Length: 374
Image (tube, rainbow, N blue to C red; front, side, top):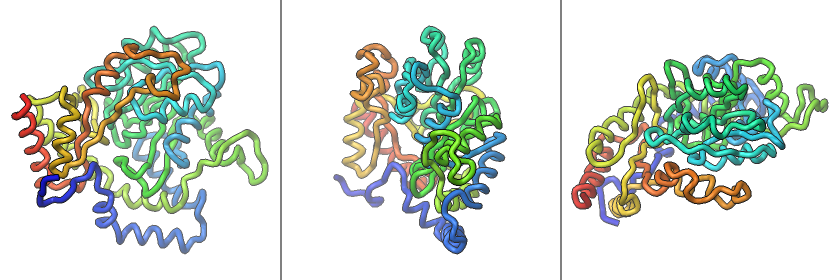
């Protein structure tokens, strides 16, 4: 690795964030310690209210992680064996894994070249009498085409579940992701735009009946201690993570703004060199990841590494080609746009504490590579 004055630049710098927020975090965490209550306590309740107010939903429920949020959403809608749920093959494994965990069948639809999100124009042809829902992913912090997806869902009497695990604060036509479909699901994994210091998740909805059902299901199917109305699961956001999130919430919008500003600088610098993120009108991309697309993706990744800059591939293998989903009988070539993106996409470092100086260094290395490999 060549020497540079910054040392290794990571994809996300959680140490710096923790350092900056150390004092308010310790204050919140000390309150939890002094309370003696660590599960389903006051911090969690406060976070749920804060999240609902911010997102514009009637109800929010803290859960164990983003995957559980997806599973609980499906269970609340009585989706299970014999049902089909349409989703994208170009996302993290948990999206389709959650569908399979309920016993339902994931049905994949190819993505848009521009946004990397599910393509509504290819959606209707996959609907059968077994289809119960569409699970939409707002990938990398970019909102999917919810207007068209909701129209299709309404015409076919389907539920819409938003996998907004990468999209806290993302907006579509003035509404926040997670507040547009029937149920929204979020992850608080540490590297997310709004992340805890461990696992955590959130489910949102405007329907009281689904809120009440998920509230019971997340706690072993129990509303009253030792009385179990359903087969549920143990998926509760603990008080320490809720306290951390309440502290970080104060800085959320300013941190999202910084991500957007970094993305704008990248795009301005790379616009004529590589394919850069496209943001359709009336959408707010919050850039959980900033991805470019190019033929010599692996060569650029190596060059970045040689210069002390991290990069990452999201995602190298589309879900329909994963070994775990061989039973669905998909073949290579079934979803060509997703497969093409998997071969060409590369994520660059982006996080709120990434200095302008480091941004400029990243930009210079990438531009130099482009000049030498034009």
